[in-house]
Length: 152
Image 1: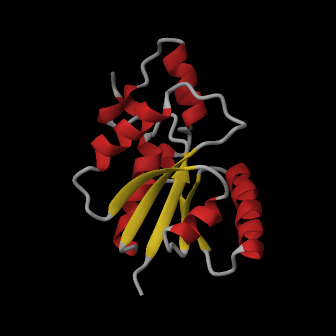
Image 2: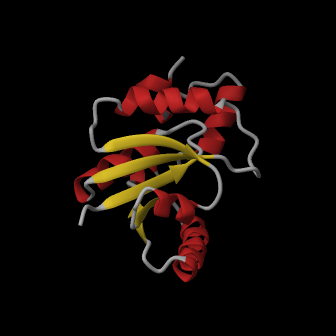
């Protein structure tokens, strides 16, 4: 059976931390869908078109990666693409508690889908899209926190 995973997120913007998690997950899976989600709770800085463009520019040469937009529950998306794994990154204990709760809820709704956690490398554990957006809004130097394809 092909090992298919989903790496869901809003990627507003994608950070070097996101990229590191994905790079570390790729050897484990046969195919990874980067699922560009729409979270109605979030106020985005960048359009979904711009975020999708960045992802395509970063990963266009990798045949194992497919970038797809989605709405709704991640487990429903997983089922649509026959994925049995969800990739999540953990930066802090607060991330762990939140992600653990989501993983357990997902497990109750879709026992066939397993969440796989990757612990952030120490050099990336302080980087969050929320903080990077704030740096960008305030015209700060954000370049070391995002892949080169994101730099305007």
